[in-house]
Image 1 (cartoon, protein in one colour):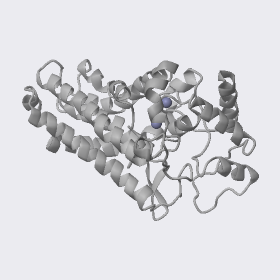
Image 2: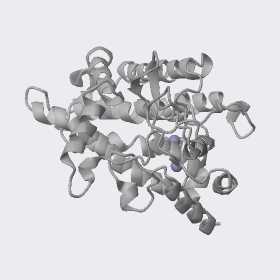
Image 3: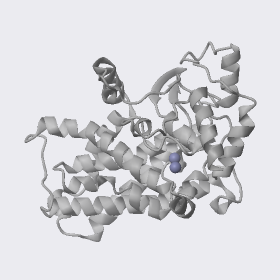
Image 4: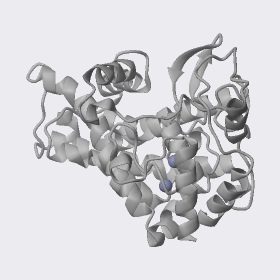
Length: 356
Ligand SMILES: [Zn+2]
Ligand SMILES: [Zn+2]
């Protein structure tokens, strides 16, 4: 896969050496030479360079950080959507801690069934809208081609391959961890909080979960890029050079075990079962959103919901970069940050050449 990447980079290098800022204006595309060059590289890309959470800049850019969290958490966004979904899931579709104290197949199976249905509805809904109906055609789509077929995929079809690993292994491992945490919380092995006891912590824990995911994902992901783990496990996810909603958690079962271990933090940090559900939604549904391949959902040509993760899209194209997320600048600190600019692209092209 690394060879594929190097060939891709070197081949494209002659055709496109620069990327331009195109802005978000959908009706007046950048017609300059730089804009044409950028469009040769991507069908669409967000403003470049992409940036990390300003809270971790030094000196801290407090105003920018406030805007980052306002836009990411207090407006219609994937985070605010998953909070609402987590609360609803806890109230109507989860066992109470008392009930979960006794392991029974009814409630364990119930968690698996609801996660399966939620995944089918979310990933299936996004796939139907963007890929089957092509309701947005290629508007705001990072790369123009849609999903592909080929022998490298199970059943010779990228969609069926991705659905298999997502629904069979992904949902099972996610549900197994979640049932274990519900049981641990119900059995009194974990200190539980309620909103009434700790209202500030209940709210603050939500963005902190996102930061923890960024840290956990970065290090697990770097481990998976070690040659031995990459070839055995992680290459399965990277067969998706182009991505779709079901690619999000289409992984080898061993990668699922590592990836979905992030919520085990709830065993030592006092939280509420709602936080656990939210944590799993941020791992599963956010990955599904982020692999949709579109930057945002348009309604009457207006952006209504940011869904794409261009930071991770760069990882699928250039491989040896952007292992984490923008919530924590681990990639910047460890020299693996690709901000989407031509300068970063040239740097990573050299890096791949030196790796052979
Ligand atoms: Zn991915
Ligand atoms: Zn990777």
